[in-house]
Length: 147
Image 1 (tube, helix red, strand yellow):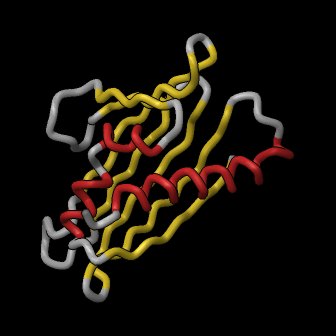
Image 2 (cartoon, rainbow, N blue to C red; image 1 turned 180 degrees about the horizontal axis):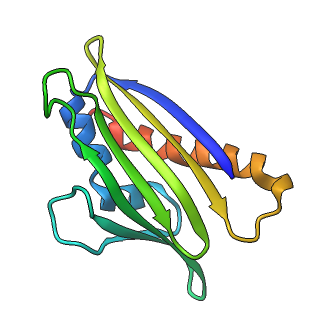
């Protein structure tokens, strides 16, 4: 298993950051060679399932994810937004949690998780963890840019 965690702050409100981070299809524009398909009807919430297909042609794999916990920020006074995903693919398994909380004049985002790649030697787990931090950091940075 490879653990990762990224922390970001943004001038966006927690609600605006949450909307951007949980618009699953938008992640694809920030991940090379990836298309994302939400396979359940809107709105997003517990039970939402989506698939990130990464690669070219037959050299591709599916990262199947399902939302198992969904608490938007502000749904109760002082509530930290928290979304937990389970990765249920044949190649990629694990989990990810996105937390959004008020912070100074905006909000703080903590995105953490655990990844497992079928067949990956344990010696390569640190490389996977660094790659995950880079990838999820790229996604967060791209989605949280105030446009």
